[in-house]
Image (cartoon, rainbow, N blue to C red; front, side, top):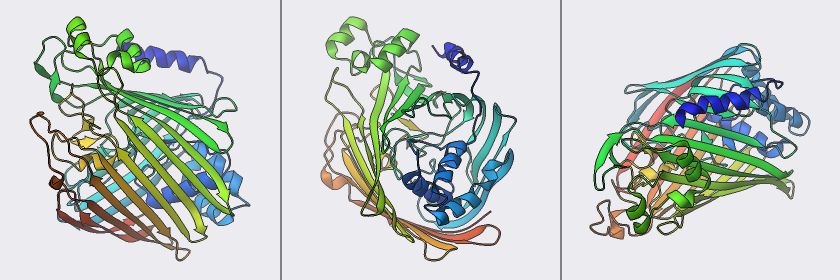
Amino acid sequence: MIKKLPLLIGVIFSSQVSANGVSAYLPLKQNPQLEQLVEKLLVVGDNTHMMAKPYKTSEVLKVLKSIEHSYPQLYQKLFNELALYKQTDAVTYAKATVAYGNEPKSIPNQRGQKVDTYLKLEAGAFANFGNHFGVSIAGIANEDNLLPTQSFVYFGNSYAQVDIGYRERWYSPMYDSAMILSTNAKSLPSIGISNVEPITDFDIRYDLFYMKMKTDPAINSGKEVGKTVPGKPHLAGVHLSFSPFEDLTLSANRLLQFGGGDRSVGISDFAEAFFLPGNNDNVNGEEFEEFGPNYEVGDQLASVSFDYKATWFNVPFSFYGDIGFEDTLGGGKKNNAYNFGLFLPYLNEDHSLRFENSRWQEGWYIAHLYSLGNTISGQVLGHWAGNERGENHQPAAESQSINWVWQYSSTQNIDTTIRRIENGLESQDGNGSGRLPLSYYTIGVELETRYTQQLQEGYWGLELYTGKTVFDDNFIKLGAFYGW
């Protein structure tokens, strides 16, 4: 199946040869000032039906034109911030951070980076060679790792842009957490295809990708019952969105982790599992006896999402959310997640507020075929709170976050996020040998705040990240940064 993926991409690409224009991408969870401005734009602008991140620069620039007269201050700020992306090539951002931290706790949505990281260098650049080919180079370097974030080549046209390399993806309208795919884990090399120009008057957008994951030391064998073998699982994903009405965008998202070790998956197996997941997921005892251990293709995550934008008493808002599905009815109970958020970009000219809530049932990010579940290097692919649990534990949980941005002068702002997580139900341990008491976890709380001041050239700031984990461990990180 995987060998035929380039052929499939070629067919899609050749069918749209008359279209123009590939596009670079905006940063994702690396440039908070720019990303907050863009999120405001996507509530108050026209034709903003984008639900997968990172956003393509050409799409954002089109939306920007629609607020030139209605929101002149936001327009001018973004016009200046996005000026580099209008060029054929540019270094778009660079930033250095020094910090003190006391715990090896993961920071939400930061590719597995830890609180005790004391030095971080970030940069991004791109170059377009005509309308049909470009290169993006972006990454993070700290004392432990070099993390490519958006480093890849892209080619094609506005209806079929192919990205090959370290391209990140975020499949959700949620801002502080994405249930199935986010930047919580570091990116791996992938090949993907998406459109720059929306298709038809319904603004159809798609994004498909394939990658090979890191080695899992114990994948359930597809040949011998009770045996495990090491191997690298495959991961495929798809995002599809459309807008049935001017103010409403809907999307569907799927991830399928499959194969690896001695588990064989043909193209027909993949297609059936992807489009008819109930047939090959959560195999029951009767199916297992009849078809053998290789019958179950892999583990799946899916979600359906919505984003509704409107104005109420002259206050623009975005109400959004998604419902996630980890299991089907084939051989076990349902396993769902429920998420919603409310974003008020203009409480007034200087304040914006965002509230998000997430709940999920037992077993999220646990895959019985794969010992590492839905993770890369110990970090879950989706919601950051999935890391806040004991090894091999699978509790149901909930989290909330509140984000407040105060622009208290033309050059200074404070961006503050408060998070809460509670592992709320008893859950079976990884060996099925007992139950964890509720007292195993405490309620985790986090405070993340950032002061930023714009300078004539660049900006500088201070940041604080502190709180208490669900394991009752206190943590703190203090940092200073300079960017340009």
